[in-house]
Length: 243
Length: 243
Image 1 (cartoon, rainbow over the protein chains, first blue to last red):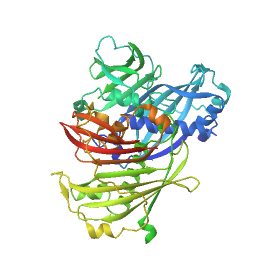
Image 2 (image 1 turned 90 degrees about the horizontal axis):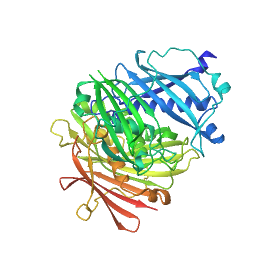
Image 3 (image 1 turned 180 degrees about the horizontal axis):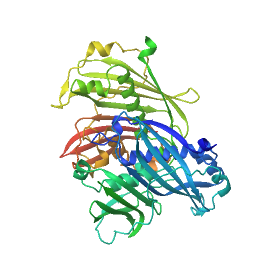
């Protein structure tokens, strides 16, 4: 039973999906996490289709990823995922990333809400149903939390939401937020350092044609706070630590 | 032996990778094709690592994709790939896409060259070695060919190459060319029509920070020619037919 609570997924990193360093990227890891989360939930009766039947949809609210190293191409990755907390409005899902030699190289924590598909407002979760899958497997990284605003301190890079940015709900895809934010860093940072922690909060939905501004500020040595704003209001905030 | 020549790959389309219509996209199909091509070549001694040992790398030169329908999310896709021609400088690889009911919904043709990793110039292929895998399985779509320039007729949308655009060689990723080109079409086209044929020619490499212009012109009803230019010179051309 305890085993059934933890999902196990296998990936092989692919050469044409790595970045210029031949390493997998934060958005790629994000894709693995979302894939595993979606399959793990579906196998337990809480998948995309199950939620749609109840006129609800999962919405990723917060995500924190901590990495000690980044696999190169053609490496096997095993990803474990499990639920560690269920509340009335939010559920918390953890992840552990293990390489081909059995060494853990990353952990992640995510916070999810369910919204009503018509009103797009949060709905109450099936606490009892979801709680059957809670396990106390450890996830030794800090929970994602509040990120201080930086949009008033920086001018911001303009970006207009395009077709390729949209997900099945017609909103800016969770992974694309990450891509657009990472693109604010100069390439030299990627050459010299690694991201040790990437944290993102999704606050509201980016829509097609929306004129966004992308903000980035180094708040202390190697720590950056970021924001994606529309009309001066943040739709997403992120915090990135380089090492 | 004939069976060994054709590679067979299985995918399941994923909800968070579809577009706003809940359908898989041309870049997503491109990713499947590149994955299958890369595995099929590697299994036969012509993969990324084999090429690197010879200080060479595969470069995708042309690609044409024809689709009669686009799978929705959570559908199984079987992808067949095989080599149909090998020349001194180019090799031609075909693809057939089949859905879960065994119905073919797409074909693709690709032309590949090998370059020397230091000079970045084309090198001679191992014609004898590669020819062992040629098969005459039919691929009933037109070969990719010359695409007429449109960059002088249109003003072009500016785009600067970013971190997320780069592949392992530090160049604009083949799939990102497709994304940036498709983003030139208004969302209403995606709502009302489908792409029946997407063809792209990769002419030279986009590099980090390069200032590009993206061009698009309807050359006849539902047929568009496109170009990605740097300094007035096309680094890529594409032709898209909507239905």
